[in-house]
Amino acid sequence: MNYLALISKAGDNYSGWILDFEGAVMAAGKSLEDVTLRLAQGLVSYAEELGDLPVPRAQDLSGEDTSELKDAQAVWIEPASQNPVSLELARAMTAQGLSGAEVARRMGLPRQVVSRMINPFYWGHSVSSLRRFAEAVGGTLEVRVEVAA
Image (cartoon, rainbow, N blue to C red; front, side):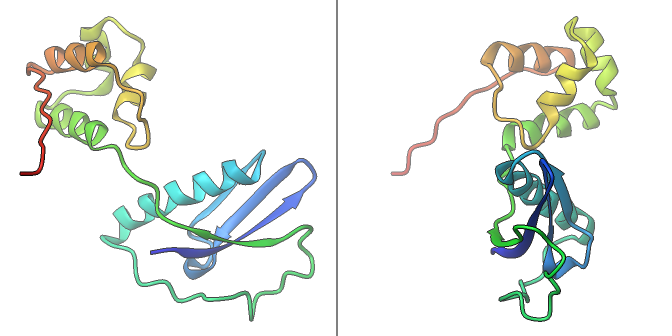
């Protein structure tokens, strides 16, 4: 499902919001691409709060006052993809009752590394870091490739 967003430029920055959610999903950034990505991620976060996203309602900008917005443009936003590996790491950590700080200590790494690893929008895991994480939470790493028959 795609949601209509309005993105405008003010000085060197951009800001945007998803029209269907009346200010609940907003983002700002240095580029149009940055704001678009943040809005897509914001949709995922909002869906977690709601349980699911409603069917998009806004189809155009009718009824929106864009007269004060410089360079305003309509953009269709799709919720961002979440990395199932990051979600599994967060699940395993929670299941063991461990904090990110404790996992980081066990891995011998800064807390920020573990925060990045469990971020559902992070896609840069290495096999060695996954193995270290698994060991830190008392588990093992299994990599499997399934091929459709």
